[in-house]
Amino acid sequence: VQLQASGGGFVQAGGSLRLSCAASGRTLSRNVMGWFRQAPGKEREFVAGINWSGSSTYYADSVKGRFTISRDNDKNTVYLQMNSLKPEDTAVYYCAAVGRISGSYVYTEGSSYDYWGQGTLVTVSS
Picture 1 (cartoon, rainbow, N blue to C red):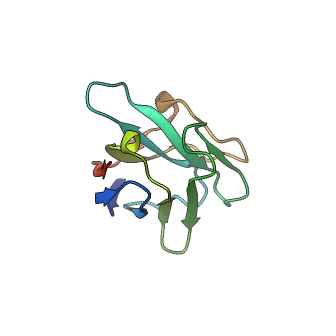
Picture 2 (picture 1 turned 120 degrees about the vertical axis):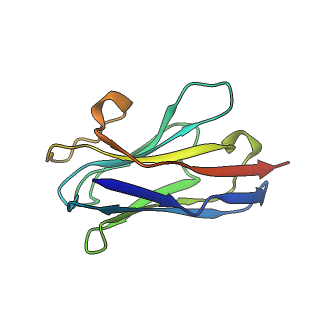
C-alpha cells in the first residue's frame, strides 16, 4: 500500500488549504484513515481521523471547528480541509491508514496505523 499526500504549501494566517491523500496498491474503503502532523522539534500528534464510511470522525482539540476530514472511497482518497489556519499549525502533515478492517471506532494513536504517507509540508505565516 502506498499513500501519497499532497496539497501542502505556504499560506498566511487565517487562510485555507486542502490536503489530499491518495491510496494505491489496495483499496482502503473499509479502513480507518487519519491525519497526523509533526512540527519542528515536537512529537508527532494526531490531527483527525475518519472511519470507513465517513459516519464517524474525531479531531484533536487544537483543530476542532477549523479542520474537516472527509473521504471518497470511489477514489480511495482522504482529504483534510484546513480553515482559519494559525502559525501553530505549521508542520509536516502525514496521512495514515489502519491495516485491519474496522467499524465506527476512530483510532487516535499512531501505533494503531499500519500505512503512512511521505508527508506534505504546511507553513502558516503570521
